[in-house]
Image (cartoon, helix red, strand yellow):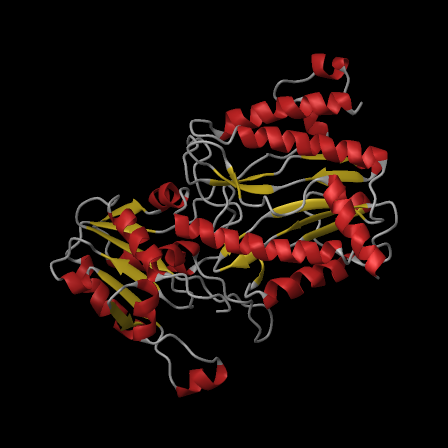
Length: 434
């Protein structure tokens, strides 16, 4: 991995918190993700299962974590299984974790090779009453490929049909929604890397530059700061494409007079930043662009004040909608008749602001967590209102990453330029130096 070790203490604590939620005499199992094929003998870069990583810190394929906290022998209450390496693997694929290295990363003292899994698992399973299996229960998940977890569940339920099976996902959603101080520090590291890259890009953008050149500038700065790269497919949009919410082609020329929308975030130690900024390709906003920009910024700043304990996403989104309605009236995009005649189930503001304002952030960009759960200190959210005026080829979205606290929300992106005047100043200072 490119990132520096983040410490086994985090993963030890995560396991302790998870174990406290298990029913008595329960066995829990977590599998790594597969290495996914492309074509011929190609494969996609490996990305670890976030639940396995959260509980162990292990970032290697073909790994399994098994926990039976009530087992008689203390040294078998937590077992980590790894793929055994050999000289051939070392030559072709490089170094794989030794047992000692895996133990140091995870804080798990008992590490075995995968070849020992069936026997060791059977010893535990026959003593357990419940087996917690792990599934992807994200509210927006669409799984069309059978995962390693899914294959394991089929095997386990066939071999142990009389056990009681429980869902691990609700427990992990409960835990992962509240970030520890170490997790927040790791997210902050990803944000700091994103900040460096954005400031680099502010000095690079000018008319005639291609969107993919800007993407390359981000990637260069990310990797040179120990990031694996983008935490998600980057959106580098100019002109009309700023109105396409998930535009990822990034292949157009940036033209004088256009706005650029940059929705990017560096990943660090599997945690990701999620930033959106907009800037004028020419280095100066037009009056209309600035008016729309500042309207979005005002909504964002007011929405941030609502990220406080006790609020809940559905009600929060309704209140943000009211803020946006007022701004759209001020911009002349809506009138009082539009508001009077609107369908409450499809408010008029959604013509120009059609997505939600906030989502959980962490190991997943749209991190796990119940959207109906009240906000609590330690939750990390994005705030990303936007206005998209297709008839004007003008889309503005601004996004910050914020921690809910007992008092004022903590903006982790406070050092990343967002005021229109600051963005213009940096861009034009850079232009004068060329």
